[in-house]
Image (cartoon, rainbow, N blue to C red):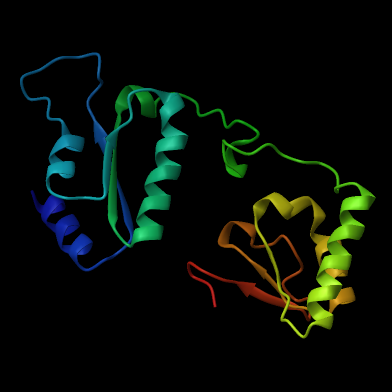
Length: 181
């Protein structure tokens, strides 16, 4: 009850937090088994889930962290001992987001030229142009820097895109959004 009281207090204060609790082995049954996720959910936490299988661990963790950070709320995951004892195998595409496919090359030269022409029109019309990139641009950071140099425009990254470009580059303005400038 002390943990739950602290979480409710932190949630009311809008503290982004992920609480991870353990559970007894899910294969054993006992009258003392408590559905912690249900209790925490009924207490009003933004997200509270029990991890039933090792393959649920990474997606649920990602969702819980995302929910906590994006809404300044407390989240909770209950992880049984049987799941804790298994090896986590990270899919190669996990950190890029399950819905997105990775790309290994730049777009065709025609698309790049079209982009540069469109950006040049914006600049000529005295409109402000900025470059914003995230994690999916991690393999083309040097090209992003070069484009910014050509257009004389600042580069911003999302939190997950931190490190995509050289953060000491004179046109780098750092991370915007969560924990950013």
